[in-house]
Image 1 (cartoon, rainbow, N blue to C red):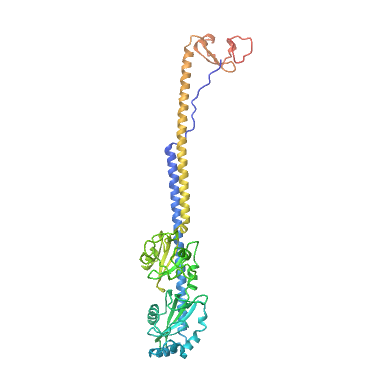
Image 2 (image 1 turned 30 degrees about the vertical axis):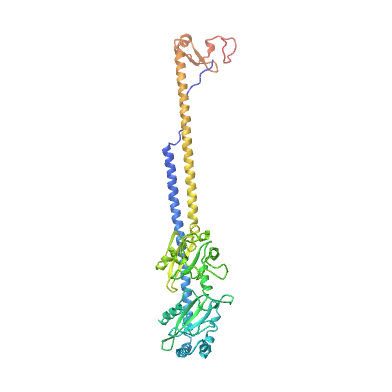
Length: 457
């Protein structure tokens, strides 16, 4: 006979309750969200600081450059003898009979040419012009319209200078053919004029001296020197919304059909900073003509005299989503905008969002797996307890049968010692009713062979 195995209801370590697990998941998500919000706020602040610092740096450099150009022309306007030459040419032009040829043939005009000859060799200058107090051009470089009052922007410039201050125009398309960087004469070339009053010995203004500047040289360098990444750009625009300097994306504008396909045609003085309503770089076409489109968000704010920035994306003149900063430069009477594609400006924020989303997804999946495993463990635990309860019940039943048996019943262990005995066996083999457990069975049952764990009936 074999001894029965002792039955114990083992207690297994329990897993965390669902509420604690759920609380941990929610705590992790909350902490992750807080960390992301902090990093996103810092990243946004960094992006905002970048936009503002770039804008202000470019604005400062443009203002310094324009001030230097005005100071340069002021210095030449104060050249000894220039006022007397201007008076003489003004008197000749006032007769009404002196045309372009006559004015250029005057000795005074040749003296002014010789006086400014060295300065006009500067690469950023395209010539000079000299106006009388009526705004009529009485002298100038080879390509200037001497003898005429010139375009409207010259008149507006003369009006400001004759009031006693030096001034500079924003870029505009010259009405007369001018040489480009290669020396080829082209019409509609971008030009600027810095001008200062010419005063006589008594301080009276007797004329206006202007230097024609090439904005495609120095001004372009100022605007492009602070470009960052693949999409950042800075440009000037007029009150009418006309882009005054070149875009970084002329190739895209050519593919969209907004400017000519030749390399000579450019965005400067041809594109308006208006919202097309669609992304033109994707091949889409605006539903309304450019002149009827609203100005971009940044252009509207700058025209209102505001200096600001936004990290909320808006469409630029290409229809691309950008973030930007803007201001107005009174010296040039032009707006300045610094922009870059929103996906590049907020790249770190986008990466953080994806990382956070991945982390939350991992935690949620892990939580679901943990809940599933918890349920499986509970089911297994329930089955185990049921099996143990059945075993206990069977053991109790067996014990009741053994204890109530009218026969002596002994249960032996592997060594042949009594592991269990019912009352009848104790009464039969015991001494004075003392328990007989742990005693060897050979004490009660005679055998001629060594104990092997089996008893032959």
